Image 1: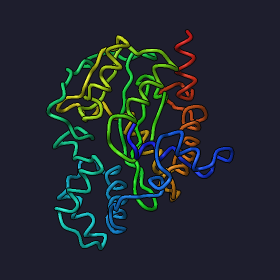
Image 2 (image 1 turned 135 degrees about the horizontal axis):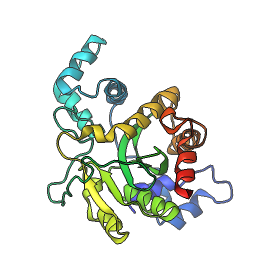
Image 3 (image 1 turned 30 degrees about the horizontal axis):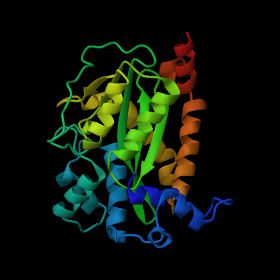
Image 4 (image 1 turned 180 degrees about the horizontal axis):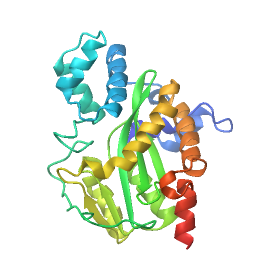
Amino acid sequence: MSRDRRKALVSSEYGRLSVVRQCELVGISRSSRYYTAKGESTFNLELMRRIDRQYLKTPWYGSRQMVRHLRREGLSVGRTRVRRLMRLLGLQAIYQKPRTSIPNTEHRVYPYLLRDLVIDRPNQVWCADITYIPMSRGFLYLVAVMDWHTRAVLSWRLSNTMDSGFCVEALEEALARYGSPETFNTDQGSQFTSEAFTDVLIRGGVRISMDGKGRWMDNVFIERLWRSLKYECVYLREFVTGHDAQREIGLWLDYYNTERPHSSLADKTPMEAYLGNKAA
C-alpha cells in the first residue's frame, strides 16, 4: 500500500486512537501525515468540477467542444489546459476512445466476451469502473464493482491516486463477500489490465472480458450510477476531507442498494434483486 493511501487511513475522528498511534499502526511518520504535495490551482479545480458535470450530460464532448462550452460560460481557457485536465479526470469523448481510463501498452488486454450474451441472473457478469470525486481542495477517485444484471454495488473504494491498489482491494472485498462471478468486464484502463488486478480474477476462476472499440455502451449501467451519485450526493455537498467523502458516499450507496427501487427490476432495489434471485 502506498504512503498516500496509508495517510488517508489516519483520521482525528477516531476517538480511541491518537493520531500518533494511528501513524505507528500504518507505518508512517506523524510529520508525513500532515504533508500535502502541491496540487492543482483553485481555478483548475473549479474547471475540473465544471468539466466533470458537463461530461455527465454530454459524454461525446472532446477537449475542443469542452473548451467551446466553458468559454460560453465566461471562462477564458485554452485547449491544452482542458485536454490535460480531462486526461487527469480520465474523460475521453465516447466516439473517439470509448475508454474512461488510461491504458498501459505493456499490459495484456483480454478479449471482449459479452457480445450477444444474454445477461439474466446475478453473478453472471460483474463490472467495474472509476470516476472522479471533486473535493473542496482537490479530488479523489472512486471505483465500484457492480453486478451487471441487478445493478447492485458489491464493493467500492476511494483513493487519492489512480494506482491499481484501491481497485484490487474493492475486487477482493466483493469476491470475499459474494463469491465469484462467471465473467468480469472492465475497460482497458491500466488499473484493470494490471497483473495485480487480473491475477485475483484468474485465481478465482473468473473469465476476464475487456471492452474494445465501439463497446462504450457496455458501461452504461455504471455510468448511470455515477450520474445519480453525483447529482444526488456529490454536487449537493462540498467534501472537505476524505473522511467526509467516505461517509456521505457510503450513505448514498447504501440508500441506492437497499432503498431505491428500479422499474427494470420489477420495482425491487438492486440488493433485493441480487440477494433474492441469487437465493432462488
